[in-house]
Length: 154
Image (cartoon, rainbow, N blue to C red; front, top):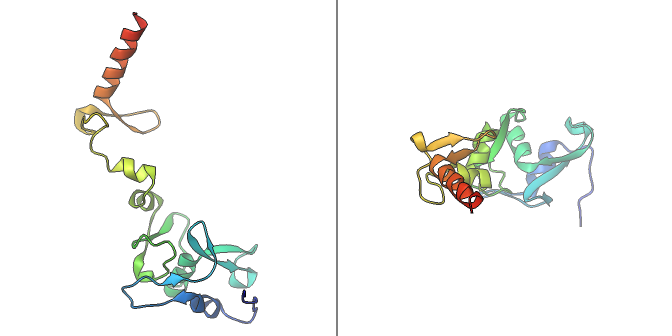
């Protein structure tokens, strides 16, 4: 049964009972609402959030521990890669780019590649940037151009 919203309880009194705390080195898992893989807490105007909305539980933990919300230019990264963890020893405030590159996204996987799919190095004189800013293998571009020219002459 879902707990009724009590307007007299503080944010900390509403938040910490929903956390399964262990040792400081372990993940403290969120035991309430999870949306998109992340623990969330419904916040209202009395909590300083208007209109009422769901806020990431890890962000609330950061606020309760450090006394500040993360700013717009930085994000809270889960160093443990467990998105329902609210242990602030497992969280770090970083730029959006660093947070993305530390993750498991396509962008993160591509950023760590050292060679193209044909085995050519993605560095030095063999590397160029596309108009979109993507890393492109010059040797593969040469091969593709040669194949297009050969196909057009047949």
